[in-house]
Amino acid sequence: MIGSWTPGLAALALVIAAVPAQAQQFKPTRTIEFVVHGGPGSGNDVFARQLSTIIDQEKLSPVRVQVVNKPGGGSTSASNYMASKKNDPHVIACFTNIWLIDPLVQQAAVNRLQDMSPIARLVVEPALVVVLADSPYKTLGQFIDAAKASPGKLRWSGGSIMSRENTVRQLLMQKTGARWQFISFPSGGERLAALLGGHVEMMIVDPSEAGEQIRAGKFRAIAQVSARRLPGFPDIPTIQEAGFDIPDVPQMRGVVGAAGMSDATVAFYEDMFLKASQTPLWKKFVEESQLDGEFVRAKDLKPFLNSFEATLRDILKDAGVKVVR
Image (cartoon, rainbow, N blue to C red):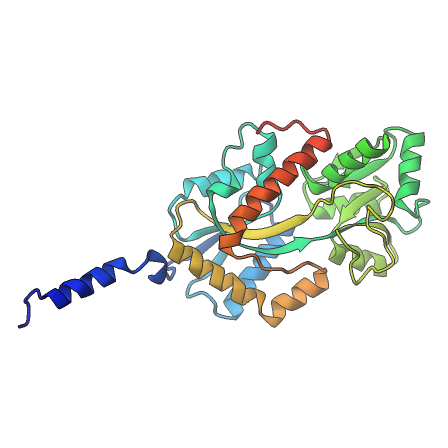
């Protein structure tokens, strides 16, 4: 009889109620904010815009993905903004190492990456140590020897003091006893200009930018910041192969959502970025940039972040950096 409550209907209702939340599909209904902690043209800005372009071209999202720049305080302006968007399913962020490092070294940086909603890690970025093509330093060892002979005279350009560039510098100085200056610039273009203009003697740069300058005859690569040699630079030794036994400092990039994101929402974004990572345009970007494009899913990302945070804490301590957490 229509409208009667039978045992069969009751059982069906129980089954429906028992369907897990992650099985209930999510689709965004308004523009997705893709937060980055750097300004326009920064590494993570370029990275996020490349992804948003692919998502748009491949129609992987029913709504637009808009990159939102929140520079300032390393990652703290961006992470504070993410904290203010708790439970918002339309806000995601591009993270790098600095999102883990800032809470380790800044008492005021209270918004930890692990407290957000992990979605995916997309790449690990190697880097090259470069000098001008006419530099007298043909190896990293020669630069170190010169720095020992003239403490504090030589200069190395980079980003913030918590950047991979300065962490590598601190580790090398601690290992060798050499001393040289770190000159911080807010943008990659300024760092490149400082080396090209002879205002610094060395810098760490990503392979795509370095390759362009090397082909133009302006830069010479003398070492690689990588666990293994890159295919595009098979004759350039890693820092460890050059004779300096310091920990590798990998630079990763990935995506997290605001805290409180449901399993269904995380699943939507994970699937969207997985599909983006399988497109020919993304594969071309990864190959040309000489990135490690191993995709780490949401379920594996949080334990990875916890483990990597512990590794970074040890590296920072080894580099002589004060750790507050």
